[in-house]
Length: 234
Image (cartoon, helix red, strand yellow):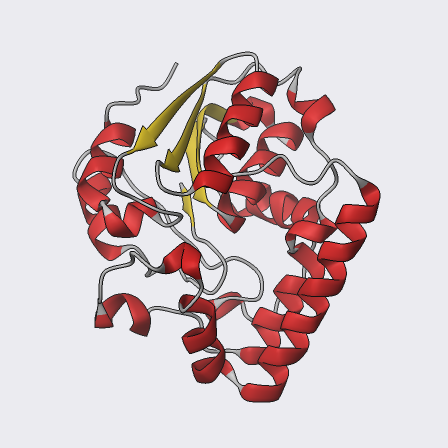
């Protein structure tokens, strides 16, 4: 099961997912606030429980990117018995300091208001113009797969943004699930987050993807997919 990032949908990362589907029975779905689930409003914990109700009962590998990776961490903590392995790309255990979380929630509220004000197309232009996405290749199909519902995206920021996430560091120390932590080598912030997760999780490995930034699976889909394809269930 692969979980997409913020503004993406189940149809995103088409090259990456196509490669993975050559090895695995790959499942994707739209997370709350996105795509066909745009009308669903849910916190990270609520999203994890919705997934538990929707996904197969037999154990599976769960992977996710950025927002999807944060959902995956919450799922693993709440439903460990459902998983054989965890794969997280550009993931964070959250913000340790409560004041910092409060600042981030305010920033996300401002960003959510911005979506409501200017609409999805203009917002996506601004969102993808950020330095963290500077190395993304031009891909009209990938742009067309982005979520189109302004109210859904703004609600996702308010309900499931990074500022809403509790610090998971303490809880993750007892998560024995085999975990592959992936980050783009040029995404310095999330290289640090990957190391923090590696220091926290008792059964984790970290791999950095050379010449890639935050969305490494879009920039170097073959490298990331082949890395994950080599992961075997336990």
